[in-house]
Image (cartoon, rainbow, N blue to C red):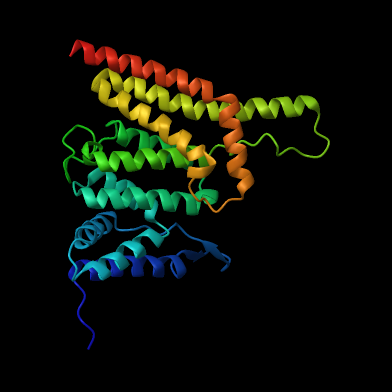
Length: 288
């Protein structure tokens, strides 16, 4: 008979299998006329997913369990409900390896599901990443290390670095959400001007949101928050550069338009912001 799977492997397979059944069978209901209608979206056992990912992540270090751990993490990454599970893990888990896997999965799942996400959820993902890297997202005091401060992942440098890269990817993916080129036939010059203004305002708001969050966090965390801000600016520039851009399953024209827009409209602003944060960091160091 086949070897028995470890308990954690059985658990995640059970969670994901049950989730798949709910999605394929239980997510449709019948209205009063008997017609099938979509039901409430299925949910994942977030605590169960966290426990499974924690054990699989640490299992990677053990040769005897590595193959099964990799299969578990791949199964988790492919789950249609990976995004809420990743957020839950990052908010509550004190296992660094699990938080790192959650950050990587959040990136992949967000890119995979991006077109189906409503605008408020797209913005919510960016704000969540900002909150974690700056220590402004609260953990759960009843679970894993959240006693009133930031969530555990905020104190893990390797996870923060990963989430900074994820945030840069999310900013770029959202760059053309407001697209000045998508106008109906017969649009006037005034329509083009208004569309260009709206697109610029959308992009400016994402960058201003990040800079504002860094400035607010620096009042509490000082130079640590400013270093994160500098790293984020560098990650965005890296993400928008053709030679270092992440694969997004989008045409090359998307990447090129993002690059040109950032270079022509925002690059000077970026360097000005970096100078401000760098100068404040040096002043903090001189006082210390």
